Image (cartoon, rainbow, N blue to C red):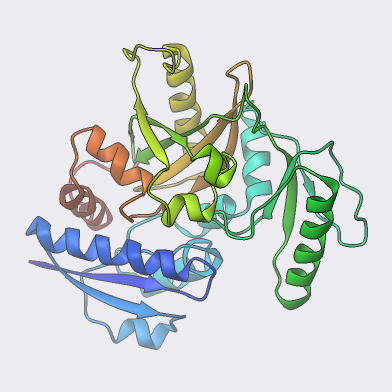
Length: 321
């Protein structure tokens, strides 16, 4: 039986989410009967510490700039043993939301207009409402939704204070959350396989319809709906739209160079036009997470999903796309 080292934690804002995801992955690898997992919680690793751990494959289930955005991948590349997930270049590109937008634009994919936040200029670059969020964080950490001038002023103060104590950079985008727009879709990728499209519907009263950290991980009233071409009913999405976002997810994934797994997020305007939001190279694996949900809809249960990822890293099965 192969040994799998599951790394968890990290120094970033998504530390707790990583712990939950990694425990799920370790349990699933054990349940598969194909791997003997070891779960190890870290802040950061150095080369000697990693080299001292005896394992056949490394599964880094960390979210955020260090564990998902390139530095850990540099260490894993230098170590030389197989590991799950994208390499350093793709990890850095996907972690940078502005760089992802540029990659999308080169493919002709639509993204929302955006500005980097400049704490020296506190005039909002767009008409309200707007969304302000970190360029290099996920899980809606540091997200501000500003519908009024007071909310914008409060967000500016919070972002400026954060930037004084950390290297975090923020970006501003128009907010599409209106009664006729703002539907969010996500597409999971397992190498060449695109998983079914999932629509995310936060509780409108509890979170004002915004997919916040709370809505992702702490609430049970966020609704997730698998959208398929043969769906009926008033909430059904056109087949051409589902095909389009699936194709665009594959294209941006290939352009960035993701491998093994990724999740690509979109938001729709009032005309059901999709705008690419971001690419995640190590999506969550909590009970609310979307890649396991999409895999289940495709007939792949969690133990098989996690074993598949570890096997791909080991070079077992179909070649990596």
